[in-house]
Every structure is written in structure tokens, then in C-alpha cells.
Length: 210
Length: 210
Image (tube, rainbow over all chains, first blue to last red; front, side):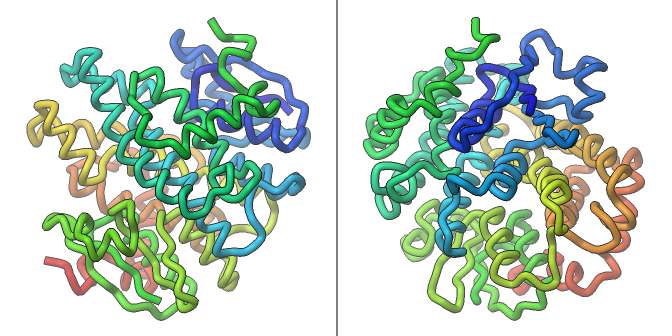
């Protein structure tokens, strides 16, 4: 498989974590978002939306949109499972994932922050913009983890929810967000820092990191 | 089941469509977002994140986050299916859904538009903000539908992708977005307008519509 992504992109990062947790070997094809490579003819031929990540599978499919890629990974490579077995529990994990994937991350990715700057915000304003959605979302996630987590977001092993959380914490630190109010999330961050699958997925460990 | 939602909320609307397509009977419990009822103690006791929708199931579960609710519906009420059978096709439908659910809708919901106003944008600026994400996303979706659709987003029957698309078109019209460049999406809108499940879910047909 070939993962087209960008070292600092949260959606690429979450996809790398899931691939690593599944123990899958893949090639990395860097797409330099800052240089606009995602809008090049070559990349658009692969993924017409011009966003990362895109996953080329061994069957020649090109999958886009990380939530869809992660569900595909779970369906085609079910072991180890990244979703619990009961429908109700799966809904909890997916709600945690969507909380990050829909309510936080879309508001602090590169193209949106550029648009916020175009509305007149300076760096302090941009940090404040990103921070408010992160604080709102993490408060809700901290409460869910308090209820369902036993070392990870849900239960005692990593799930899709952790694949979403860890890149969002990385992003929060870039925006100087104070995370002291979220001890359970920080505990998961610490645990992920000791986990080979999460470590190998870290932006600093990608070939295109600068 | 009881669906806690708001007539004009896109995430409530998409959940209603899925419930109706599955032929499920549910009660509607309106949550007036403009009056701030989502932050009331009573609602927060139900859904601590203070967002709509929330679905109370017959088993007493309270599910939040529409992407998680829709997957739960598909798992617990598999007929009629709102996802295709092969993993690759499912990934395409989920990518279409995520394209709306992650790349468009989070940028034009009520709380985010309020924040855009706080950055100094007037109504024209707000419409332009909402419009740019809709135009970007719809251009990508139109291309995917051209490839995979046969009357609906994917194939010849409604899927999860249509549950996401139709509320986003409704929202686009509110922001005065010119949709002429998306004939395939408009054809789906027309078809949905003739479909009882989509009609019953329309904001204007909700008890809390004003």
C-alpha cells in the first residue's frame, strides 16, 4: 500500500497510526501541502479533491477521506480490532472519533486557518480560533474518556478514537493550548508516546519532516 | 426511539433521513439551538457535549455524533442497507459522507458562523465563508457522483452519502450559493424531493419549524 500524506497533517497522522496498529507495511509518498503539491495535476489525478491523505491499496483502489480509510482498514484487516464488538460500544468509539474529526480538526487545518487569517486574524487570533474548538471538544472528550476509558479512550487498548485523539493533541500543542484541564487525555498521550505504532506515526518520524 | 435535534440543524436532518429510510418510528424532541437549550442542564445531562443530535434508543442508550449514529443504525437495522456490500464501495460512500461531514458542514454550522462574525465578517462575508467550502466540496462530490452515481450519489438507491448531501444542499441555498455547476447533485436533490423518507425529514416538516 502507498499512503499519500503530509507529515504534519492530522488526517495523515491518524491514518498512519491505524496502519501501524494493524501491523500493515506501507510506503510513504509525501505531498507537500505548503508548496501546494496537493493541487498538482499528478496528485489531482489520484485524488480529485486535492486533499490528503489518499491510500493506494494493493488492489489498485485509491481511497480518500481518513474516516472512510480507517473504516476500510477495520473491515479488511479486522485484527487487531480498533472498534469494540457491540454496536453500542462501537457507537461510543465512533462518537469520540467524530468529536475530533468533525467538531475540532476541520476548524484548525491548514486551509481553514489560512481563511481565518484572510478575515484579519493575526497569529494570536489564529491560536485563539484553533484553541476554542480544541478546548470545547476536549472537555467533552475528557468526560467521555472518564466514563469509558481504562488507560485509552475506550477500554484498555487503542481504538479508532485514540487514532484521532493523538494527532489532535499534537496540533493543540502547536497552537499553545493549555491542556492541564484534561488529565485523562494527557495520560493517553503519555501512553501513546511509549507505543511503537504511535511513535512510528509521529510527524517528526516521517521522511518529509522538516 | 427519541431523536433530540433541531429542525434546521444539518446533522439532525441527516439523522432523520437515515431513520426514515430505515422505516424506523421515532419521537422528535426539539432542542432550540437559537435559544441555547443545548447548554441547559437538562440537555447536558443527556449529551454532555451540548450539541445535537442525540438519539435515545429503545435499550436506553444515548448516542451522540451523527456519523456514529448513522453507522449504529446501519449495524442494528441493516435493511434496507445504506452502505454497499463490498469494502471498496463502502469506502467510496463513506468518503462522500466524510467529504460533507468533515470538509463542508463543520465550517458552516451555527456556532462556527457566530465565531466568523466575531472576527468581523458581515452577512456578505459569512455567506462568502460558507460558500467557499461548499463550492470546493461540491466540486469534488460532483466528480465522485459522476463516477459512481446512477441517480443517487452511489448507484441507483439512497445511501449514507445522500443522507449527508441533501441537508448540505438545503444549507447551501440558505447561504445563496449558486449550485448551477453541480447538475448531478441537483438531480439528486430533485429525486429526494419526490422521496417520502427525505420529505418527512425536511426541516419545514418538523414540529419546531418556524
